[in-house]
Length: 390
Image 1: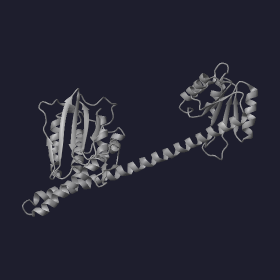
Image 2 (image 1 turned 60 degrees about the horizontal axis):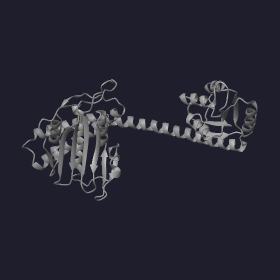
Image 3 (image 1 turned 120 degrees about the vertical axis):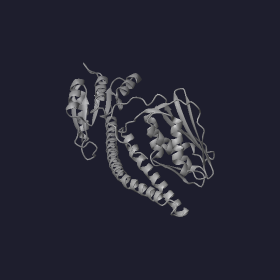
Image 4 (image 1 turned 90 degrees about the vertical axis):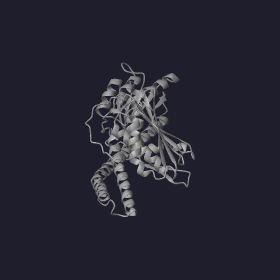
């Protein structure tokens, strides 16, 4: 193969495989006149050896050859990770549809019936080489984008990780001020401190989501399953976010004798907190948020319903993507989920569960997730990394 096969200023290299010397000479002379570099092989085995020694840009391959036919040669090429992307054009006197189907099934990109028309061969070769060049350029661009994305993610991860310590300090000092100034500050100032504490808590949650989402995407965050009382986890989540409710009511009436489930309690707690915070964000003032936990058929289902503006059906999957934004009908405001729902999706799926949303515009939304009662499926052992706790 040429050193840089996607450069258009370099002649492409073509390997012609045919057991008939006359065919080889005819095609070689034609393609050399058009500026291509041409090599020839008179058998399937010699062709494979030639390709492995120096992969060409494209192969013109006869089918009816002794010892090893063209179908077999093509199949071996496509089974080789390093050679599978080399385009193969079949040249054969076999003109039946079944022969052509077999050629394409073996991995060929085109099929020319003998006796060949030289102009047709030239046109088809040029077309496949152009497609190959574009494919290589596209792959190169994709690899560059992946590299840029990795650099961006590394930078964001570093910045976010460094934010955690000052945020923890801010939160601790606000708590200290609140405790020390009890009865000494007017109610208005105490309210400001409470608001600042809420904001610091939310920022800490965002940092935790970003760090753990990154770890989950890389498969580096190991779950720590334990027996969990799911209703108890919901109650803890409700208590932790009660200060954010304002005039909204959170209604949760757990059923009696719910079975324990095997799950990472801290991760599930954060999933519920994220979904509940999301409901509080979009529920109207004086709205009602209803939470339910149901266990049936080996699955535990948590659902959180709000009476907010609802989500258009075409966005129900998009909102679980990182930094997703959905335009809502009410006032055309943006429904921005940041990383919260992306984290929830990764966390639930890591447990072997499912997550989704049932919603209708103007009638609110019900976010739900299901977890297997028996715990997450086994996975390869990886070193446990510390998770960020809110």
